[in-house]
Image (tube, rainbow, N blue to C red; front, side, top):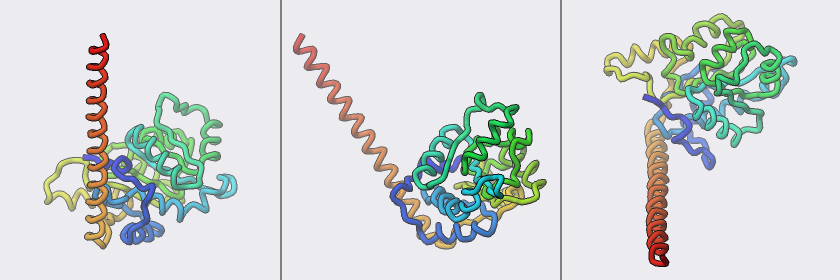
Length: 256
């Protein structure tokens, strides 16, 4: 089960709802796992929090600056997150999703990458490798965002980033987890509480679902309906193209 944080959310013309502002305000001072339905605008909460905490990432690392790191599971999510953040933030953003292009022996290259960019988006394993080779440290991170954070279990790279590197750093970054599901596996309702507690312990964060459930549900339903209508329109246009192509073929046959 996945949360599909980016693909199902269009935030280009979006004003924050009260529950999003409420959650963002909490996330400014404490680690949170934002567990909201698909289409409820989890990504916008991340955008607002990045803005709120951005002064420190606008500075050079040598001047006490830090960096915001966004961890994702797939190349496609890395690409889409990068586009979304670029659309809404006046910060230098770059994504790293191709393992073949990652040279763990080039210390100078990574020093430049972290100095030049203020928000860096990584597939989890790549960032874990960089930390393991001492090419960067969580001490220099102000905000660590985990997309689809329910994957942070067992020996998953999400979990290992926290277990091997978060616990040992001196200056802990703020943690923001985004998910539509407490667990990535199908589990019985009676085990849900245990799964939630384990996720909170690994991410050192508290699960937050928002206080205004009616507004959250309403917003999610509206966005899902809009997305469904968009797909309907796409399919209708495909059918029109097929008919036009068929007519064109028949005309060509008649000319012959």
